[in-house]
Length: 155
Image 1 (cartoon, helix red, strand yellow):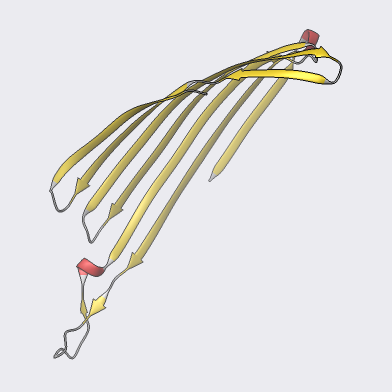
Image 2 (tube, rainbow, N blue to C red):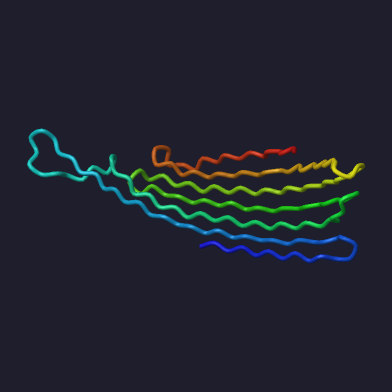
């Protein structure tokens, strides 16, 4: 399931603001039960260690806001963006579970300048920060394993 919303409002003297949001939600299920037999067996027996039974649920939400001025001589823009990504998955036979979450905050500032008729100079700076958090429950360890990092995204 996916939805997008976009709203742009022009203001006086080339100024504007722009708001947008999106949401994506998906889920899937994969079942593959393996069977095997030894040389002297007459029937196939279930082999859980070779089987895969996988489910996942993914979600993504984003909000974007921009304001600026459209002008061929001297224009500017400023943008802010917030994003959340979530992913949960489970392997039934292996007994592993994963829960991943990512939060991202990004900003952008830019200007354009046209000193001559057919030339334009654009300058944009878009730094951001990303927070990632994963919790894994692994069957082999029977314990939660956290994994976290922070990523600074210059641009």
